[in-house]
Structure formats: C-alpha cells, structure tokens
Length: 225
Image (cartoon, rainbow, N blue to C red; front, side, top):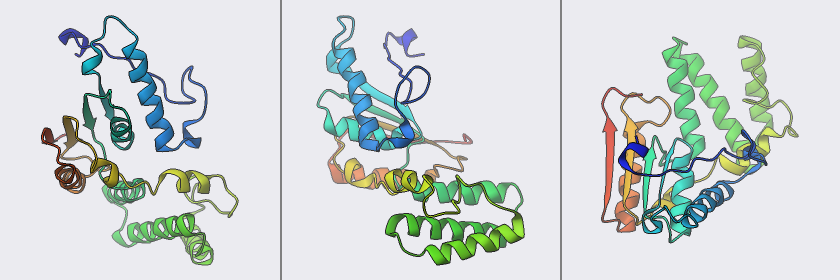
C-alpha cells in the first residue's frame, strides 16, 4: 500500500531474528530505538529518498520504541503507531492475561488468582523482595492447576527470565510521550484484548496534550482486534 502511494519503506529484522545479529530479549527499549534511528540514518543516504519526510510506522511493541526514537532524532518527521501502549508492559501483560483467560471460560476466581500471582512476580522482579509470597502463591497454583511454564513464572531466583522482566516490563512510556511533538497518528482496535483501547488511547491523549503536540490523531477502529 505504501509503495503504491509512492512512499518508500525500509523494514528490518529485529535483533536475533532472520539475518539480524544480537538478541532483542537482551536489549532495552533505548537499544531498540537506536536500531530504528539507524534505519532512518540509512534512508538519509539514499538519493531516492526525501530525507525531510522520513517517518516511523510500527505495531505493538513499536509503540514504546518509536517515540523514544522520534524524541532522540531530529530526522523523524512523523510517527504512526498501530496498537501501541500508553502504559507499562507489565500493565499490558496483566490486561492481556486477564482478558484471554476470561475469553476461554476460566472461572473468575482462578483468573484473579493467576493475576495476583503475576503481580507478586512483578513486585519481586522490581524490588528484589517478596520472594516467599510469590513462591508460596506459585506452589499453591501449581498444586491446583499443574506446574506453570518457567518462562511465565520462574521457579528459582536465578532464572534468566527475571532479568528480562526487570529490563523491559516496567518501562513507563508517558515521560517520552510528553516530549513527542512530531505529527502523530495512533490507532487501536476496539476489540483488542491486549492493548486495551479505552485504557491506552486516553494515556496517549493526555501525554500528547502535555507535550504541546499540535498535530496528532488518535483513532479506535470499530470491531477490530
């Protein structure tokens, strides 16, 4: 669609995907924003590109990454976010877990027990305290429903998943969105059970107003997931 409208695009494999080196799980959002800026820098070297009109378009996690890149680089002329969150990854994960479990017909009490375990998990990852409460709740849940996946609920303090959670799950996008002044289009699906439109659209709106952004459009697509 972009090409048909004479809009060139460069798309790159995430770190550790396809032919890209590295490991995106070991990267911070600042690191990944740097990759987006590198793509912008590459486009600026091409004579067939209007370097004054290079923008960023991305989906999901890009909603956290692109604003960082746009704030850091004066060469980003616009930003288009599809299903980008205006809250932390931790909050987004809890929203998704609760909604997906509810949709499968899981009893409400079980859903809330699992959500409570997720919150204990995040408290331990963030503060380094509360292991006993987390481990006890995990064991109780395992007794009732079977052992949970290690990548979802690590069983030891040394599991590498804790570092992944600490590195990325508590990133707050609001301070960056409050600095985003380039023309911005952000879209969400009304039925998205992960990036909840009613929760994330207002967060973007408040932040962009605080940024003094004079050219932004926020859209919820009816009946879209």
